[in-house]
Image 1 (cartoon, rainbow, N blue to C red):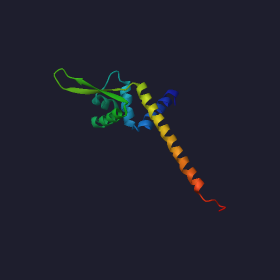
Image 2: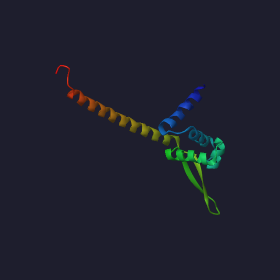
Image 3: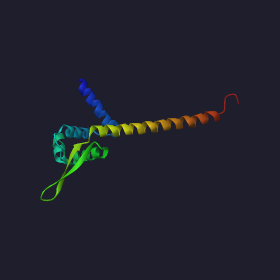
Image 4: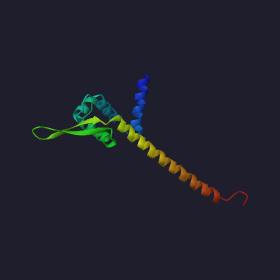
Length: 130
């Protein structure tokens, strides 16, 4: 396996780990990253060879996690449609760093609570000599 492919897989593992993204979500994200311009849901569906409704659900998950952004394009004669593009990678990285910091702080708190709980229990437990 090439070093670049291994690194790409690790990066995509981050997407799954932090946000629980599915394989299709990652494929849709990849299609948007590789596109020269924002894409419609129909274009994303074509790129990943899936039904429009299936691609739409993946796009909604990507929007929810902040990995992509939606822009409204207005027709001159009225009406509109949406296109999607990847969010700036530095913003995504900042969000993941924030999530990691929050998780780390929460785990530290839980560890402290564990220690406090069982330290108190240890002091109150009868000894074999009593």
